[in-house]
View 1 (cartoon, rainbow, N blue to C red):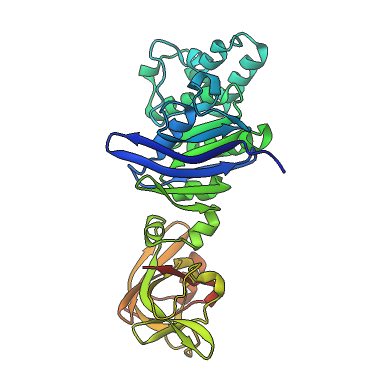
View 2 (cartoon, helix red, strand yellow; view 1 turned 90 degrees about the vertical axis):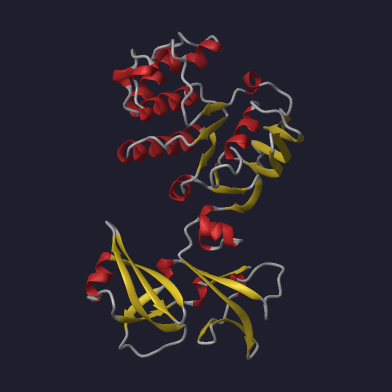
Length: 364
């Protein structure tokens, strides 16, 4: 079994009235961990604690099997890129990028120079190497900070909202660079963000924080389709959260909403673990892309119900259709081709349906 690159054991960190509480996770050298959560949930505090910039009030940290709980930041030798860059104002861009190499006596090493040139070209900052930070835009400073963190090939790279100030094109190029560095150079990455699309595109594992605690951990795709709590579902822009209860019929479990809609039978994987749900008030979670939309004239079928289109939002890649039916609001996402083929508009009646495998029940 491969040794963990990083292991965090029951971390507690007090910052004024805020506390991280009992944070525990581990990651291997091949993992790209994304820490996700709303503003103020403790994402940056956790990253700073791993880097050694904040003292732990409890728990322990291990890097490649060796305890680093009490090591100062410079002895941990981790790469760190802040959201607000924190560049040295009296150094040029080139000197900022080479700062970590200089601290290790590697500033003049040909390998460092070649690597700096490669990173500068990839991040489109070669023309900025002679400038000082005060003459850079926010996105440029962020790219310089990222290049500085990556330069010395640290075993673990800590990124605090590294893409937040970048335009779409530069963001895409930087995402590709992060993937390449992670896979080709074997650098483990912990990446803080509030953007779940970023987490889906980059992360192999995800840690969702809420009020200083782990709300849910797992693979991003699993959390996207199977959030453990209503908070997680809402934070991940869960489109359809429907109240109801689970009822038993002929030896199987079904989800009942408003007495008119019966969805199921429910697969075991969609039910809360360790909970006997029958008779309890629960919430059904269905992704908009899992709800099919068809014309009202089609014959009723299992797991389908009638609704009225209340709004239509056409995006560049898909169409969001908002409906109202059986006392609830519903959202379905269709491809542009599907929407054009249906030739529907606001105010028309439609039929919605879903396969049981796309149902997910959340405890209230």
